[in-house]
Amino acid sequence: MSSNITLIGMPGAGKSTTGIILAKNCSLGFLDTDILIQINRQKPLQKIMDERGHLYLREIEEDEIMKINIDGCVISTGGSAAYSERAMNHLRSISTVVFLEVSFEELNRRIKNFESRGIAKSDDQTFEDLFEERQVLYKKYAHLTISAEGGSQEDVAAKIMEAVEIFRKG
Image (cartoon, rainbow, N blue to C red):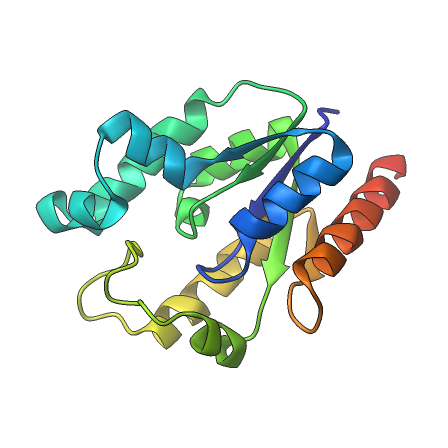
């Protein structure tokens, strides 16, 4: 099995920050698919959605994830990656997929820029609707689920390392 670890979860779950700490602690590279999209498209996620809509952003996200062919990396995905069965199956085949689970109340406390953050959702969808919809998808694709609240991001990274090691020993 690949040494990659992929982090999935809601915006505000700590995928990027925890991912960087995890990569450093495991001597792995780090790849953030949101940043990859922004670099390759030369514009922020919110601008992509403003111009072409949230479904177009999800298409781009799937395309970028399908191109990932690396080993020895922590991959942090955008929160909407789980909408693509194709992308998630690809990530499952090249990595151990970890769902960073955070309660709706905690995410609400953490996220202050919901409207401008570049979150791929329909205009009439509330953050709570999005949360409920995505929880099912994250749990469907994750090899492991780790609580990402009630401790520091260093603590969460340590929990991930331990859980992935146990999982891989099988």
